[in-house]
Image (cartoon, rainbow, N blue to C red; front, side):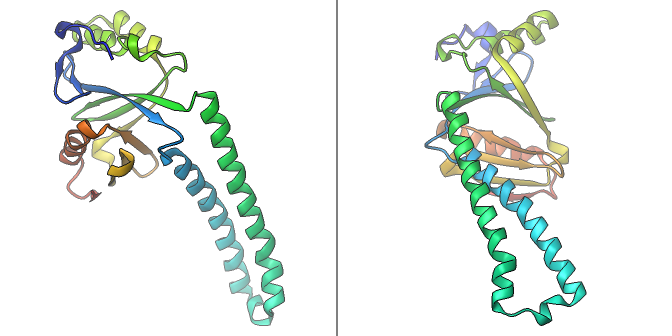
Length: 220
């Protein structure tokens, strides 16, 4: 990927991570959606959790009412069987939806990361974003460093769309899954996935671990 000169791009600290003039670390990551199943796994977990909550509620009602004492095997099968089938159908639909979306994205998912001592922000790169022209985020960093908010805003809007952020001081759990190049940064109500290439992974993970609270659970 071609980068602008040192004045605009900042200092290169790893293969893909740059310390920009505004004091923030920035890098982009292209997720291969067929090779790396991280997003698919997250979707399936959400589906299972949703159905698990409903099932637990139904079981609790029957336990409180004492109904299970009078159930035989066929009754249990008739109660749980349709529910299990519905779960399997929803999982299959979730996987199919993922494949459709992945195809729409060209089987890749590109993300811009901005990280400093306060937290990390994720911005989804637009579908028509070209790696060879990846200067929008660097232009934004240069604009911020120079106090030119117009330049900064134009750069970010030109290269990105949807965004989310994690505040390090609110992080409760960090889970590093190196073989999938992902670091899960979980708050109480906000769960984010930080991606980094092999050459950048150790730097990003170490930085995150050094800035989350000492009480945060870290798995690496």
